Each structure stands twice: as C-alpha cells, then as structure tokens.
Length: 69
Image 1 (cartoon, rainbow, N blue to C red):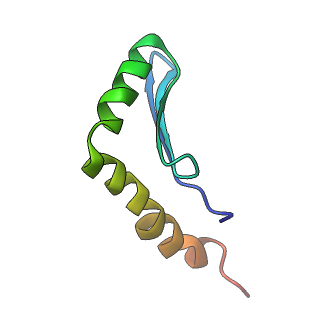
Image 2 (image 1 turned 60 degrees about the horizontal axis):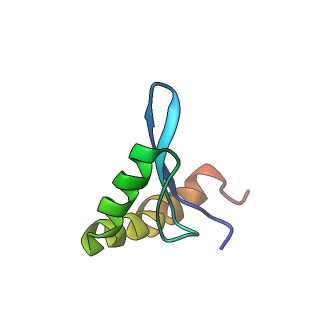
C-alpha cells in the first residue's frame, strides 16, 4: 500500500494527464488532459495495463532499490 505507480504525460513542461495507481484511473489537469484521461479511461485494457505496472515494475524492483541489509 505504500508503493505508488505514477505515469505522467507532459507538454511544454506542463503536466497534462497522469495515471495514479492509488486512484486507479487517469486524471487530466488541463482541458486537453481531461479529454485524454476520458479517452484512456474508456479503454479497460489500458487501465488494467497501468494497474498491472504497479505489480510488475514497482513491487518487482522495490527490494532491488531499497533492499533490506
């Protein structure tokens, strides 16, 4: 529960859209980002793939990065 996967999309140094594993969906931060988030969230396979990234990327590597001595 302490591990969070975030994938952010930027344009001109401004965060447009973000997937947050704690929220479980995409969130838009600009007018265009809201449209992108709606598009991404309408595709269940996209949302499922991002949710799986927490387990496949974060949980897999947490011991490597923060291993117990």
